[in-house]
Length: 608
Ligand code: F6R
Image 1: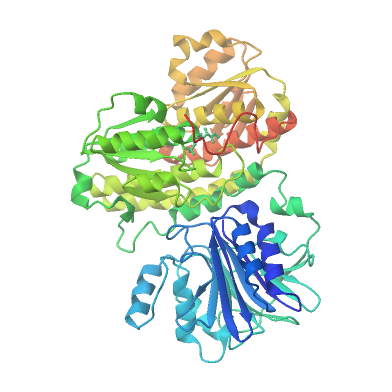
Image 2 (image 1 turned 90 degrees about the vertical axis):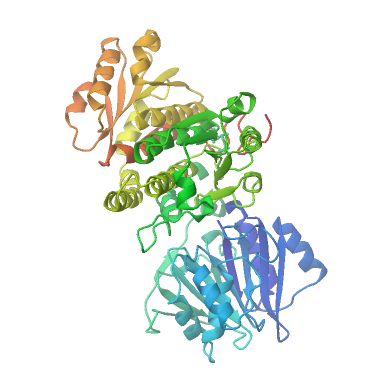
C-alpha cells in the first residue's frame, strides 16, 4: 500500500524522504512524490513509476529545505499519473498533503469544495483534504487539520505541511498506521517502521483520532478537540529486513495476517445509508441488472477458486445461473455469451494473459465484462467495462492469500447487489447478510489468534508425499484452494475433489500414506461429508478436518481438528480457508521451502 515519510530537522529533507520512501518500496507503488518547504516556496515534485524517476528528477533540480513530506502511491482513486501522485496541494499552493487510506465521502466533499470555488486538479480522494485544510486554516495548522478530519469518513494517515508554519508537520490517523520516529533534534513521520530505522529506534505510535504537531525539537499529540493525550512509545528491536515484513518471518505470513484488514477495506463503503448495496462500478441501472440472465466467471488458479465460491453465492441469492471457467479454456472454446450475459473476470494482478484474452473474447461476443482486481491501472482495468477493486494492498508473496479472501468479499458484495437489484432478497435479508459479512474480519482475527492446533498438525505431516482435499459446496472451493496452496509452496502433491466424487475413482488413491484434509464446517451437506470421512478412514487414511467450533463429535472421526467460528454456510469460505493457508505455510516452512518465491511460479502470469 502507499507509503508516507515526513521529515523535520537539520538534514536535507529530500535525502531523508527519498531514503525513507526507498525503505517502503517493498510495499509496492506506482508513483512517488515529495513536497518541501524550500526558500519560502512549497516545491512539489512527483513522478510516475519507480522511485528512481523521482530521485533522478531531484538530482537534476535539487530541492533544498529542512521540512518536507513524501509519498509512494498505490493507486486507489484515479489511475497512476503525475496529477494523481501525492503530495497534493491546495489552491494557494502553500499547503501540501500526503495520505494513505480511503476517504469514502470524497465525492460529496469534492462537490462542496468545487461549489465554494476550489479548483481540484486530480481524480484523488486525497486532494479534498488539502482544500478542506485550506478552507479551515486561520493561522493554526493543527486546528485546521482537526477541523478537516472531522469531515472525513473512511480511513486515513495524513501528513500536512503549510508554508505559513514552515517548521512543522501535522500528522493524524484513523484506521491507517502512522508512527513518528523520535530523533535527536529531528523527527520523522512515517507509515511504517523501516522508514525511520536509519535514524532512530524510538518510535511514537499515533492512535486513531490523534493529531500530532511535529517539529524538530518536539512532538505534541492531541485528541480531535485539541486536548493533550499520551501516545504509545515503542523501542524497536528489529533489523531492517524484519521491519519490512512488519516483524513477520515472510511476506506470505504477514499477508495472511493482513486479511482482516483486506476484507474490511474491500467491504468499506459498500452499504449505503438507504440500505442499497453500492456498486456503481457495474455502471448498470437496476433495470439493466434485472435483465442479466446469465453470469460467466473467468479466472485462473486461486482466482478461479474465488469464482467457484461466487457461483454458489450468486445462484443462491440472486437466482442467476452462473458458469465458471478457467480462462485458458474459455478463450479457446466457443462460449455461449451475449449481451445479456454478465462476464466477471477475476484476477488479482490484472495482468494474467489467459484472463485478458478471455475478456477480449467475451467483449467481442457482446458481453459486458466486469473485472475484479487488486491492481489499479492494470491491463484488465483498461480492457473491461467496469472494475471492482479489492482493497487488499500489494501482495508480495507469490502465493495468493489476502487477495483471495478479498476477492471473495468483493464477490459477496456483487452477489448481494444482483440479488437486491433483481428483487430476489428482501431488504431485511440483505441487511442481515450484510451484518454477517461484516463479522467475517473479526472471525478471521479470532482464527489467527489461536494457531496451536494447526502448528501441531503441520508438524505431523511434514514428510508426506501426497495428500487429498475434500469438500462439498463452498467447502469444495475451499478444498481446491487448500490443495493449491499446499502444492505450490511445499511441493507436496495435493489433489482436491468434490467429496461426493470420491467413490467414482479417487478413493482408489486412499491409503495410510495419504492424509486427507476435509472441509466439514456446518452446512446442509454436513452429514454427507461425515460419511465421506468415514469412507476414507475405513481405508486407513489419517484425516485432518476443518470444523465448526462446538462440533465435538467430529473429533471421533479425525486425527486433527482445526476449528473455525460458526458462520452461515455460504459465508464459511473465508473462515475455512484461513487454517488451510496457515497449514500449508507451516508445512512448507518445516520443509525449508521459500514460501515467498516458490520454484517456477510468478506473481503475474503475463504469458500463456
Ligand atoms: C496461487 C496463485 C495463482 C494465481 C493465478 C491467477 O497462489 O497465486 O494460482 O491465482 O496465477 O493470477 P491472477 O489472479 O493474477 O489472475
